[in-house]
Amino acid sequence: KIVYDLVGLVANEAISYEKLVQLVKLRENKFWYSYSENFYQSLEQGALMIQLVRKNANTKYSNFNEGVENYASKLYAIDLAYRKFIYHYRQSNQNRILAQLYEKIEKVYSNDWLLNYNNNWQKNINELESWPTFGTTSQQRFFKQHVKPFTDKKNRLFVIITDAFRYECG
Image (cartoon, rainbow, N blue to C red; front, side, top):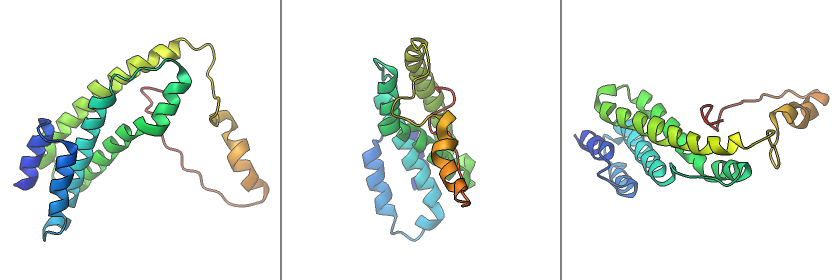
């Protein structure tokens, strides 16, 4: 019942992220928390993502490097919260209870975040004559700079590559 009510509050944006975190903290020491932990984590990550999107969806940049730096230092947290929400949502195995929140998260993430941010970001991309890699490691140099020093010494190395910057925006 508590989770169900909180789902409605978060989905309707009727509770702040900070207030939700306080309420979840009160539940952590309760008997049923371990059973419901994925529900609470879904709620927290969903509320965090919504709050961050509302604050940052209309972010605009004067140049490419400013956008890359801002995403790498701050805005990646939106995609991280979204992924954590999806993870805990799936782990809960109770899609019906979280269905209202899932729909809200998908709409906010896809429409309010990706579409707005991509449109604003695309303006900077359109002005580029070549793809700048100032201050960052280019994918073209990744092997030479990071992998080859290990393989030259006959060491084994495992590289895990993940997309931090959304494909749709990249």
